[in-house]
Image (cartoon, rainbow, N blue to C red; front, side, top):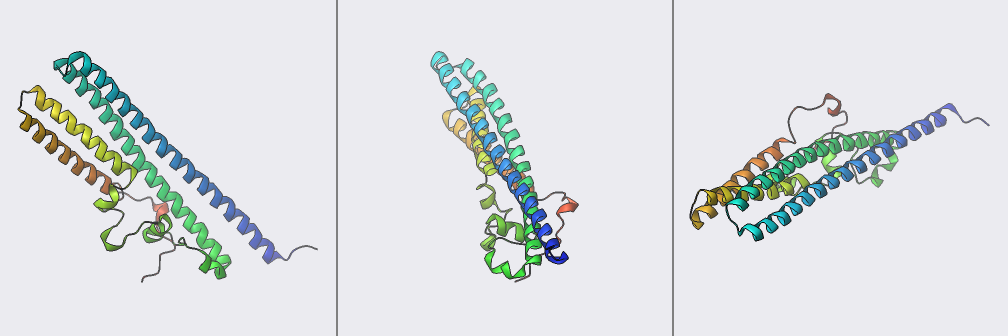
Length: 225
């Protein structure tokens, strides 16, 4: 016996939505895999650079040759770190896109079966609050997605602190090369580190804004509290 048109159409919609949902989920998984891979590559380069500098320091006893090699080596590490951070920020924006897509699919599920709403803990709304609810980000008490606290909790934020520390080490080496006393070297390293952290923090905060893709404009806004 042939199924009535309405149940058959509903089943087809559910199958299409489920396929899209699993596709987005798989894409999010690939995004996470690339993010962790990028971080591992950077940390491997950093570890190799530190080991190489330790060997040079043993041979040159922290002389002028060591300072020259260390500055050049750490500049390469800084470049790798900045490139990694930039890529991670792009991957985070991609992940936001996939979350928006999954929220829209979830909204379609609830349109077909609204009685299932109590069973969902993630959001069916495709605006920023809805995406943050799905991601499990707490935006209460000033801990928003663009706040300094949240920025340095993310992978790009964590790597930003590491890169800033490397920049501070380069500042210390430059100060040492110019013949500054120990206090001057410490102050130079601290000042460069703080400036680098500040610039990285601003860069990370602004990465959440910028020009928005029209396809991400909300269609199903979260209800106001």
